[in-house]
Image (cartoon, rainbow, N blue to C red; front, top):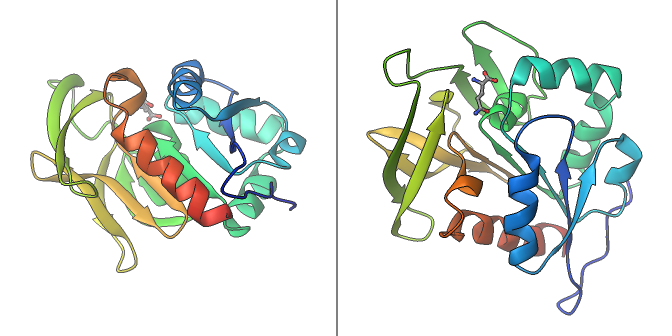
Length: 203
Ligand code: GLN
C-alpha cells in the first residue's frame, strides 16, 4: 500500500474510519491539532494517509460494516505498512489479538486480550482520571461500556493506567485506549502522542 510521504514540513493526513460510531469527535480534535483529516468510508481512501484512527462505537456493527465494505485485508495491510494506527474502545476491540465476552473476529495486530464490556453493568460508563505514563501526567478518562485489557503480550508497552488496569497500550505502530480521549477534548495529550507516532512511523 502506498503511504503518504511525510517530511518535517508537510501537514500529516490522518484518516478516521467513518463507518460507525464516534468518528466526528476524533476528527474535530485532530483538526484542532493542525492535521488534515479524511473520513474513510472505503478502503481506497486509505491510500496516501499517514495515520488512521478507528473510533469507538459498537464492535459487532463495525465488524459487519467491515465485511460489507471489504475493509479487513486493506486495514491489515495498512498496519503492516508501518503507518500509525490508533484504536479507541470498539476500535481497540477490532485491533486486538484476542476478544472475549463473547469471542469475536478481530484484525489481531496488537497482542492484547480484551474483554468486551469489562466493567460490568454497575459501572457501565464512568468518568475517571488516570495516569498517562507515556507523558508522566494525569489525564481525564471517559469510559463508555468499555473493554478491559486482561492480558498484554511481551512486546506491548503499557502507557496508561486507571484503577489498576492498563488503559493505553502500544505495540510498534499500533496504539490503543479503552477509553474515549476525544470526549475529554480539552486535554489533547493522547492525540498529541498519537500524532508524534504518525510523524515517526510514516516519516
Ligand atoms: N461495548 C462496545 C463494544 O463492545 C464498545 C463501546 C465503545 O466503543 N464505547 O463494541
